[in-house]
Image 1 (cartoon, rainbow, N blue to C red):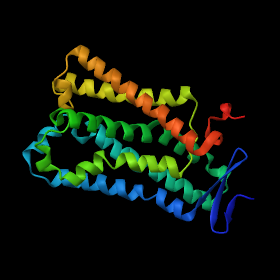
Image 2 (image 1 turned 45 degrees about the horizontal axis):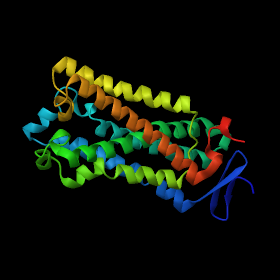
Image 3 (image 1 turned 120 degrees about the vertical axis):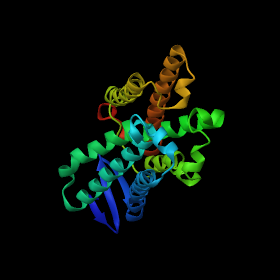
Image 4 (image 1 turned 120 degrees about the horizontal axis):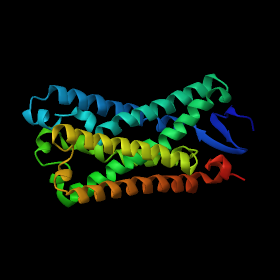
Length: 252
């Protein structure tokens, strides 16, 4: 069968294999775009309008941009915006004309959007359940409603998992994927350390409780965790979509 619309279904061809998705599936994979945008816009507006003096304290020295949670809320709508743009262009252009956008979507999701959202979910709730004062002190409950906390730290994982299940993603080579993720990870760790060196305050309370050795161990374990998430995402993608979505050099 040819690529394009046929009996109200959309077909994509990947290296000789046919992937089929209904319009309904296309619609559902774009629902997260406005959801993340609304959370981001509401959070930004809420922060700007809240007169609680503690807001100024937690946003001092770097603002909301120092928090990985907030950066993730920016990253996710960027990814879903790229995915939406790709689907629109596929309907009005030849597939070969959107190859770059498709490749960028693959790279953005596999190396950043999925690993970061899963990392934020896991690390936040592990620390929260162990001792919430290390990551999300109780006084924040007065500032941020519970539903907003879950929008920032809970909903992100099931939405990313749904993306894995509903759409295939071609993972890059291990070298490329791990390089992109490593650069992003070290860039954020470097920013955290730079903020401390300039201001004498830590982004998260947990860091203030650690010795230099403990801090190095925490960063090392965090790096191992996010690399493990990346490799798990690759396994999940292969389990769901098979060999057709392996890096090209691995395909037979």
